Length: 99
Image (cartoon, rainbow, N blue to C red; front, side, top):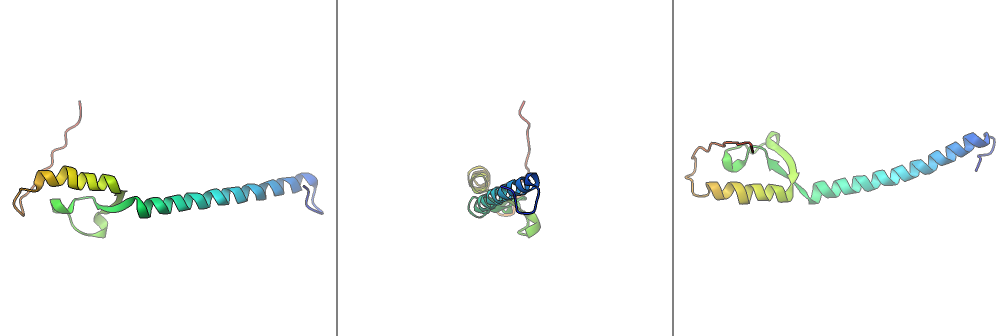
């Protein structure tokens, strides 16, 4: 529908642009809600250098990680391997590549 005083083609383009802008804004708002939900409910700060392996408890040593992955690595993979070691025992990590 043309806007009064503006060429019909330009008016149609403006109207289409406004409708598209509203749709993109709604999609952007939905994306923002999903991102906030993901960060606040499904992710948690994780120590890059694990505290239980002597890493520092500092902001510079934190990255966001999926909550389940963080729990699994810390409690199911690392902790069982070090739980019987004496406090202060140095731990070496050997990374092997799959063949």
